[in-house]
Amino acid sequence: MSSFKWHPNEPPPEIETHSKAKLDVLRRYIQEYFDRLNVNPHREEFKLDLVDGFAGGGTFRDGNTDLSGTPLLMLEEAEKAEKRLNEKRTKQLHINCKFYFIDKEEAHTDHLKKVLKERGYRVDEDRIVVRTGLFEDEIEGILRSIKQRQPRAGRAIFLLDQTGFAQVELPLVYRILNELAAAEVILTFAAETLVNHLATTPEIIKAVSPLQLTESQISDLIQYKEGTGGRALVQRTLRNHIRIVTGAEYDTPFFIRPRGSRRALWFLHLSRHPTARDVMIRLHWDIQNRFEHYGPGDFGMLGWDALRDSSSLPLFQFDDLDQTHMRNQLLDSLPGKLYSLVSEQPVTVDAMRHTFANQTAARFSDLDEVILQLVGEEEFQILDPEGKVRSRSLKRLNSTDRIDLHPIPLLPGFSRRR
Ligand SMILES: C[S@@+](CC[C@H](N)C(=O)[O-])C[C@H]1O[C@@H](n2cnc3c(N)ncnc32)[C@H](O)[C@@H]1O
Image (tube, rainbow, N blue to C red; front, side):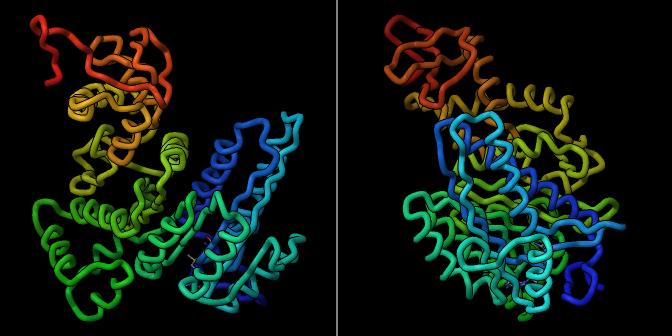
């Protein structure tokens, strides 16, 4: 039986290792998301809409037990978050989520409805919506309903867990990010399979049309693949392409590779929010075992250079050793980038984080630490929002602080900024 086939009268499919890894990342991401966005102890209600556009049948077999698939996982984590966050609160927080589960196969949604019922969930239009249909046909109604429920915030997580690389129409992702102020999209993408199949045949051109790749772009990718840039360049180009077409400011790819296989799967987080991106990159650092990254840790790290020749590059795992390594690399490469960024005028810490976020595996806290070190060494100085210079031994940066060149006078009357 295929790993993604469900029928209400049959046991669920056996889970594969990389799907399990994917479920782990998603679960941890949702946990972190709730915790990070609910630090305010006075908040009484937190509204979030969760959309699983390629929901599947709800459970998997894992040896002798049943394991929750993505729709159940979303429900479970919302409930757990409410309990966890209320443990220490005097004022109770109500987590008010609405769930949309879509799958094109009736047998899959039937299986899903069955397991939801077994676990005591009521499928209705109020809180849990299950639809049989194509995500692309359902999206209009879902966006409308989210806007009605959350006219201001538009806070939503869309999981688009396709099989392969071309079931999700990327313009739809653009629409989601554009129409909902605080939406984010998690897209799975079988990058390696796409790279393997690249060709300018009419079938492939048609097959990749949801990605908005033109015939000439496909030709370019094939040339890259065969040239010195190799698969790494193809992957980097694809990653940039997806970010541009979807209008996402931030993209954080997890790279899930079943052991001994080249069938790497991307678990791509797309958002327009630096906080959402930071939650995701923190997960990279927390989860060290199943997820492998190759390549140096400074800028360029998430560009997949590594696949060119992974054996000659150091294994980059997000552990303590590499953290030190990454900091050292950041100390080498950040000053130059920061000089160009602030050479015209001081920039806020927030803007600095925005600028560097997609280029490195560093968390905001890593970037801040490196900057504090450079401030200590009098390479840069920090101004508070009123323009007053902060002490060079300061311990923490505020997002509204501004980073400026250190005004070492070269000759009286001259400064480094021209
Ligand atoms: C990878 S499986 C989902 C697994 C599920 N997210 C989990 O891990 O529990 C992909 C699902 O998407 C469904 N699907 C494929 N194309 C679709 C489309 N255009 N709209 C909605 N569902 C689709 C398939 O029927 C399949 O059940």
